[in-house]
Image 1 (cartoon, rainbow, N blue to C red):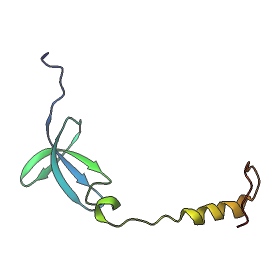
Image 2 (image 1 turned 120 degrees about the vertical axis):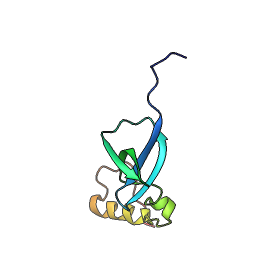
Image 3 (image 1 turned 90 degrees about the vertical axis):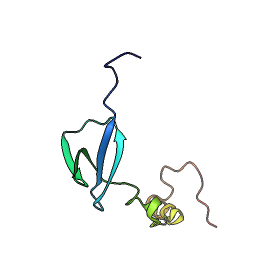
Image 4 (image 1 turned 180 degrees about the horizontal axis):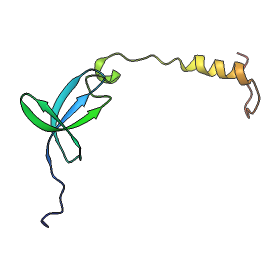
Length: 89
């Protein structure tokens, strides 16, 4: 392998700002900030969503009412621009 062509692979502190969750993992991401975790300084990356705050992992799914959105669209626009007939069923 060629020397000095690979990025620095090191431990990095990721901070989920939405729920104040921090975790350490290895990454090559470049950062300008540093943060302290358990008494040690790490390069810091601030993120908005992690497994602690994402609805898929927390079980707080939103139910999407697709039929309601379709009906709302049809009421608003009717047959204008539609190439298919609107069912009256």
